[in-house]
Every structure is written in structure tokens, then in C-alpha cells.
Length: 119
Image (cartoon, rainbow, N blue to C red; front, side, top):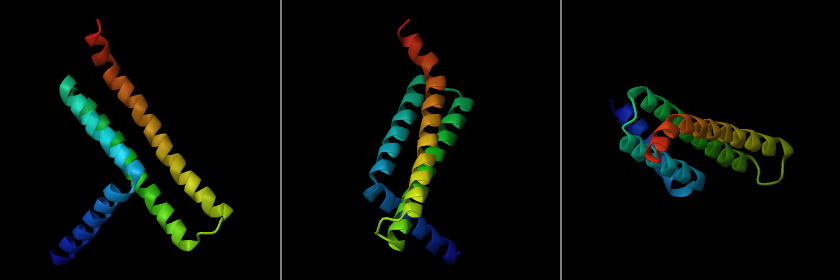
């Protein structure tokens, strides 16, 4: 049990570090909180919540992995290295893909609710 608690502490430390130091992680987290508020306002269905939570989790986890890759790459070398640039760009591209998918899913879910407000 003690090992589990110790490892949980490491994970919480990493999460705290992400929140404190990673600007894009902060932006994604704020967007996620806003989506939760909007979902509560519109009283979206359980299936819509599942989609929102899954895609939001994907975006946030992708950003965390991207941040880890960037930090690890910087430990390896601070000098320009074309392969490390590719690794960083690919990781950032993965976050972009997840964010675009989240936007599309958000539009599909929330558009009918928003359009009802204006009709």
C-alpha cells in the first residue's frame, strides 16, 4: 500500500508541475472547465458527456505527454538537432489533432443546444 501512495504522490507532483509551469496545459484545462460548465448549463445527455470527457481527456493527456517529450528532449541537448525538432513537432502535431477533434466533437454536441437559444 505504501508503494501505491508513494507513486500517487509522484503523479500528483507531476500534475501540479504541469498546472504551474505549462501554459498550453493551463489553456486546455481552462477550456475543459468551460466545457463542463456549458455541458451542465445545457444538461447534455450521458452519451454526450462520455464523448466530451473522452475527447477532453485525450487533449489533456496529449498535452502532458507533449510537455514530457519537450522536457526530455531539452535534457538530451539544448543545441539544435533536426531529429529532436522532428520529435517535438510530431508530439505538438498530436496535440493539435486531438484539439481539432475536440473542437469538432464540441460543435457537433453543442450546436443544436446553442441554435435553440437563438430560435
